[in-house]
Length: 327
Image (cartoon, rainbow, N blue to C red; front, side, top):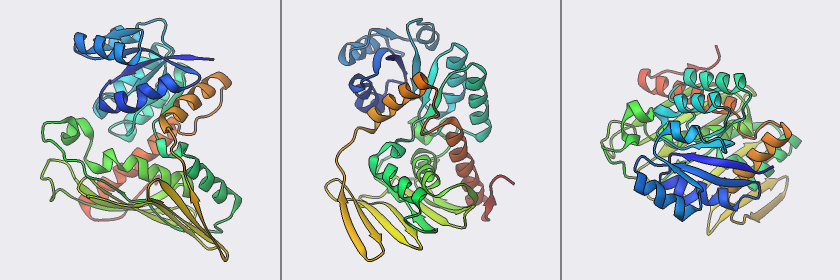
């Protein structure tokens, strides 16, 4: 099977990562894209080898050759666009965060289920071989009982007050909503379900209407705890992930490429990781799911759970108390 893709939201990420990955994927084809400006749409179609270019969502969704839509638009329109795509019978890959609220996520899942289309969320870290390996070690009990995890997602990104990411009504928030979905999702993927959250954030560095730095502390059903420190205002950070258990530990860090340092018993090992196109992995996996009817590595429910954690983090930061999930 080879899926024909449409790209809704042909911005910088789609141009740099998603559209080239679709072209590289062995079972995907970039068929169409959308840009509100007709000249830009035609130019991008030529540059990326798309067959068709559209300037309206209705025009894109009405293309009968399409099989699937990659949605990479501002967060506040994810819900309506996913539902519209599902009602046209199009499979959907939605960028993170899945939506503004858990309630919107639930509507999106329901629409895709009702129309029998595949829904997947863009949680790229899950697709890296090093995290697949760590998940296997967790499942095999190599770490013993998981005690603690940490995933810093610290980078420098200067927010412009005019861009949608700095508008709470469009983005849902700042670094928590933009970077947090990746880190809270990966920690949940490796450790388990989260039942309580405590968080804090600050707008002190960049002075926009959304937070630029903060931290989310999570408690898991299995007794473990984990912390993700998140920022748009940090110049450099080498640590990617830390995971600690009663029988083993691992540190993933960036030193001219990702490296895994493992501690199992008395054995310490350093494992080098090669570059992987996670977008390509994601698109190829998507087609496999559609063709064989298998569940995605990153489902709509995973997107919902991340949104629930983030919503609890905002409540906790605003009122200064631990917020419980699922109670």
